[in-house]
Length: 385
Image (tube, rainbow, N blue to C red; front, side, top):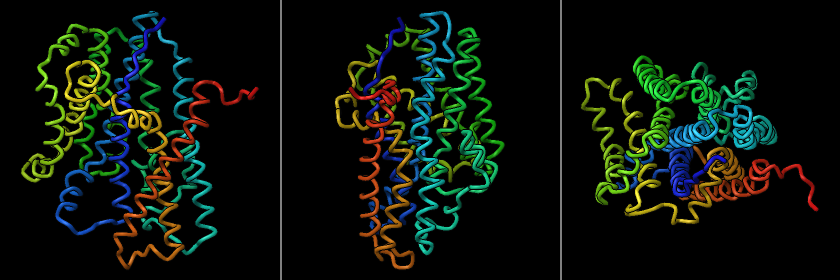
């Protein structure tokens, strides 16, 4: 029997990370800006770093998946590849296929019925019918790396596609590599990905979407999983960590967020600094995961926030659906004559953001309870008694 540990506190942080990404997308797409100094400060420091929420997803996935696989190998001396792939497919495909349906069917139908509407700016309005195979076969990350940007309703899947490739490779690494070789391979991934970012610093599509630009974050989560499984004494030392030191990952993360622009502007080696940043933030996020799950005397445990934990389980839908509902809400506001791209109205933009968030939450909760969870638990096709 494989012993499973569920990390409840990380569900809460996962939802907060999704909200971080949502705020970045919603504010930039609606063009909301209220002109106040405090909002200008928040926009520059927090909203622009919304991509850190995606970084957290990568580190978390790297830790969870490698930890699950290493635990299985220690327990059974093998890895059930087919079983693993089936579980991952059941977890990924429902939302993924739903987003494809929304992007390739519902959005074009909406624009066909209302041809004068354009909820997104032209640069973000292209529906890639001619490149459909990238989306059907889980290669959105390659499409955005090699070609032009597409409508955000679909392009949001790029990070899911990065994880799909990770899900394909991780069980093979754990199955066929000895533990020390496995650790060395994860460090090699970190070096390769860092070098890739340096080499493509002036190619934003590669830098922002190519899977090699993010593999080190998944590997960093894997290194922490390796420590948990093969160096338990190191983890036990965390239990005696002075309480004040548990704040360090959060303090350094906040400092990085607030001073990253200053660091970039004062560095003669911008390409190197920018390339190192994901590694640094990955280490900090791995330490947050460690602090939440292996340090008993934390100042705060996010697992105590039951509502956040409940929503965190449904975060995949929040991430996958939020740009569709943003498209829909802006379109409806345009139909009602409320949203204008020439006359700025921040109350309208704020209303659009709030309504989008509410609709996204409701849709994600419904989709998880009625579709995702039954498929995961093999109840979707069973008839009710």
